[in-house]
Length: 252
Ligand code: PGA
Image (cartoon, rainbow, N blue to C red; front, side):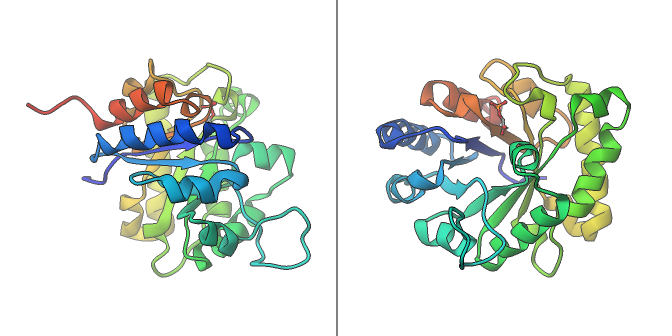
């Protein structure tokens, strides 16, 4: 496959206007690696400012409501993300699933709303440590894919999947490269079952404690099309080496 690797920074609930300078530094660094698609999903409050300043990287949201607008105090609709300059949104992150009780069905409804607003979607899946220990990791992840992914004409081209084992997020622990490859192969098989041959082109990102030291080996694992990076995406100093790792060794 010749698709460009996709490296996405998930800033979570971090970032003030003072951090826009960091985003500009990441954007300038991204421009040096045209072979990698670089993106940041900042908090809602920074989307518009970041989108106005970014020349190379894509800007996205971290969530959206299922409705386009209405009496939903505190929520943000997908058309508002698009209006602010977002081109994608992350959906179904395990922190949303755990802290906000988001079900697979809700994640799918949000994905449909985001697609209807013209956004791409990054749908997150991943097992807990207890599920992995019980030998259920692939079963759990495949059920999440079945329940969370939107389907329909033209949809696969606008979908990315992020595999993020819950126990690896923010913990400094990562699965072995072999386990990452095995899970990503299982996800690819499921995507082909769901979308037919269009499932072959969907990028599958790995996420969970990706850092400059482990990025190259994780991204070299089977079927890994990039990374979804939390903590290490907050500074150019940490994030740009991950972009470089995604670019792969220089070709002579
Ligand atoms: P982390 O977060 O890189 O800080 O582990 C990844 C994520 O939750 O997307």
